[in-house]
Image 1 (cartoon, rainbow, N blue to C red):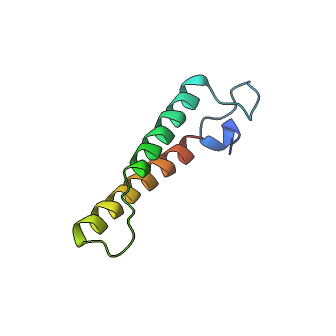
Image 2: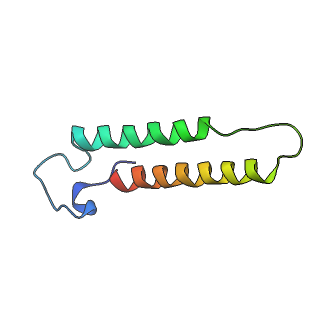
Length: 75
């Protein structure tokens, strides 16, 4: 979701308030790509998982969530 520039703490910029600069857009896309990469590393199997697999999946999910929250804050 795009926010108004003045809602992001930067104040009015004289630009359309619903636009973002290219650097911000690229940073958001890179962050989302990182989250996608982390999620693609999840190992989902039928049947029980060992404790190490569960911990690794939880760690990957936490990292992906952080990337998504970061992208949301940048928008």
